[in-house]
Length: 478
Ligand code: ARG
Image 1 (cartoon, protein in one colour):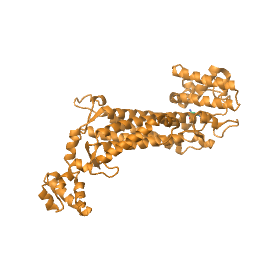
Image 2: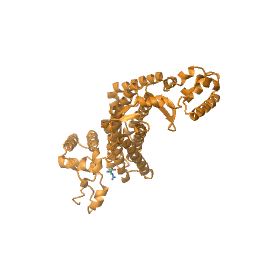
Image 3: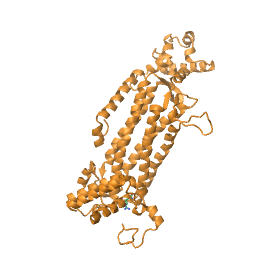
Image 4: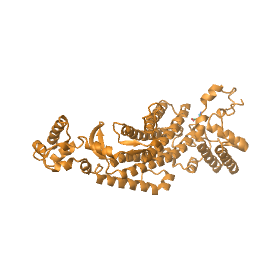
C-alpha cells in the first residue's frame, strides 16, 4: 500500500494524483464537525463494547483515545492536512497512532456514510439551539422598543404608498411575530434532525449484531432511521434547515430594507448612530446603513445554499453519492451567516438607531392616510360604505387640487359634501384617534397593541422559565 494513501484497501496500487487528492478532500471545511465526529465515534465504540463486538477494555481505550484527540484539537495541536482526506479518516488515523491496533477496530459495523450523517445531525442540533437563542435575544429587543413606542405614530404603507397610520410598536411587533414563527419552525425541524442514521452502514445495514437504539440513546437522538438506504442518503433535514434559515433571512432583510428607507433623507424616520453606520471614502457628508445593507445582501447567499442543495439532491440515485459532501459548506455558511445577521440586527435595533418621533409625527399629519376614517365616519352614520368611499375620493381630489389636507376643510365645507358630517369629524381624522380607533383584535389600536405586548411578553417569559428543559429536549413551541 502506498504511504501517502494508507486508508484504502490493498486493491489500490498507486496514490491519488495530488491535485485529485486536494479536489477530493473535505478536511479543510469538515474539520468543523470534529467535536461531533468524536462524540459520535465514542457512542459507536460504547455500543460495540456493550453488545460484545469488542471487549469492554477495547471500548474504553477507544473512548479515551477519542477524548485525547478532543483535547489535542482544543489545544490547537491536532491540525490534519489534505492527506487525511476528511475529518473521519483524520480522527481514525490519529486514534490508531494514539491507542495502537485497537484503533483499527473503531470502524467495525460502520461506514463513513452513516458516520457523516450522524455528525451533520449532531452539528445541526447544536446550531439550531444557538440560532433559536439568538432569535430570542432579537425578539427581546423588538419587544423593548415596542414598549417604548406604543403611542409613537408611523405612516403605514401598502404599495409603498401612504395607507393608514400605525402605532410604531405595532409595526415592530409584526417582526416579533415573524421571528416567533422562525423560532417555532426551527424547533419543529429539530425533531427531524434528531433521528439517528448511525448503524445504517454503507447503505444496507451490517452483518454485526449492533444495537442502533443504544448508540442513538447515547447521542440523545429520539429515534433511528427505519430504512438504511434512506438513513444514509436523506438530506431533507438539511434542506428544511436551509429553508428555515432562508425565511429568517427574508424577515431580517425586509426589516433591513425598511431601516435603509427610514434612514434616507427622504424619509428621515430614523437616525443611525455612529456605532452602527459607516462613512464614505469620498463624500464627507455620507452616513451609510451598511449593517442592514449587508444583511439584505447576505440573504442572497443563504437562498443560494438552499437552491444549491435542492438541485444537488434532485437527481441522486440511492444511496450515498460523493455529491453529498457538498452539503456541508452550504450548511456551515448558512449557520454562520444567519447567526451573524441576527447578532448585527440585534445590536442595530438595540443601540444603533433612534426613531425621530418629530419627523414621524409630522409625516402622519401631512397626508391623506385618514381618508378611510372619513368614509368610516359616514358609514357609521348610515351611509353605505361604497357610497361614502366614492364621496371621500371626490373630497381628496378637491383637496389635492386646492393644496389642502382633509383637516383643513371647514365644517361648512364638510356639511356641503354630506349632511351627516358634524364637528366630530375633526377628532375622527386626527392621526392619534385614527390609530386608537383600530381596536379590532390584532389591529394597531393602542389598547390592542398593549395587549399584544403583554401576550408577547408572556410568551417570551414562558420560554425563559422553561428554557433548560426545552434546551435539552428540543421541545417545540410553548
Ligand atoms: N467526506 C465525505 C462526505 O462528506 C464522507 C463520506 C464519504 N463516503 C464515501 N463513501 N466516500 O460526504
